[in-house]
Image (cartoon, rainbow, N blue to C red; front, top):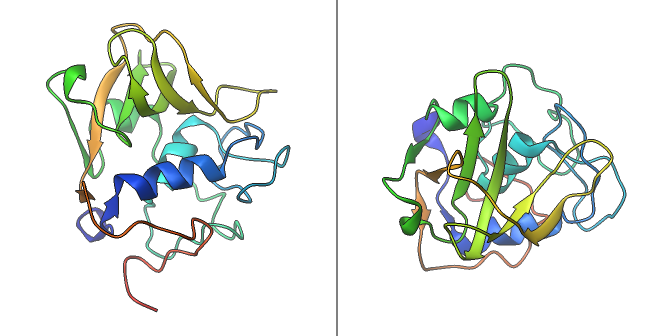
Length: 174
C-alpha cells in the first residue's frame, strides 16, 4: 500500500490542513468534518496522515469517519523513524510547504505540518496540539529535536484541489 499512495500537490496538502482548523484534538483519531469548528478531530499524527492521504488501507474514507478508528495506524514513532511512505530530509533548510516536522523520544512525540516561514526556529505550522485544544495554524518555536520529513509522491506544481472535502478513492479516478 505504501507504493500505491496517490500523488498530491503541496496546495492539496495545505488545503486539507486548512479544512481541519478549529476541530478539537482527539487522541487516536485521524478524521474530522472539514470546516466544522469544535467537532471531534484528529490527534497530531492522524492530522498529518489525513493531510498527506497516507492511510494503511486504501479503503480509508476521509470525511465520514468509517475507518477513523483503524488500529495499527502510523504514529509519531513511524514518522520519526521513516517507517512509512516518506523520507528524511538532510536539513530543515530543505523544508517546503506541506512537509512535516516530527519529534519522538521513544515514549512520546509530536508531528506538525510545515506551512512556511522560518524553518529553523519559529516556522508557521499546522498542528493538532493536544487534549482540550483545537487544530490550529500558528508560528511557534520548534527545537532541533524536530526533524524534517517529506511524503513520497508530492507534486510541486499541477492541479490544485478545489474541493478538500472530496473522498479519497486511493488515487483512482471516479
